[in-house]
Image 1 (cartoon, rainbow, N blue to C red):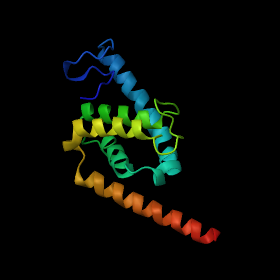
Image 2 (image 1 turned 120 degrees about the vertical axis):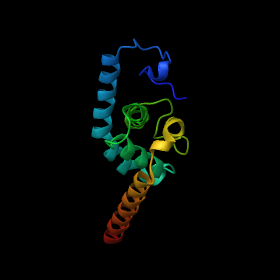
Image 3 (image 1 turned 180 degrees about the vertical axis):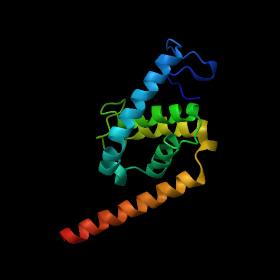
Length: 142
């Protein structure tokens, strides 16, 4: 199970266990993800073999039907992706996003039943549309 500072499922993760503190941390993660997710995805989507999972996780995290516990787990993983610093710097070729992929894969494994075909289909559509826009931009520049 992914280790988060939210103290979910009765697991002591080193936090103070306060529901208010947990909600405050989740709110900060949510704000960070809302602010930084799309710009970072646009910059790096072509390099990310897990882009579809990433976008599907985003859609699930912000789906009102998703249970709060699941949202918090996904927001923690997405916030890690958005952070400008992490364990393995993202700018390193080939291995730069391996830590982000591992965090996301662990989160998805924990909450997989909540990432619906609707989330995955929306992610695919968005990435196909973004790919077309990139192709159009490159064609115009040529």
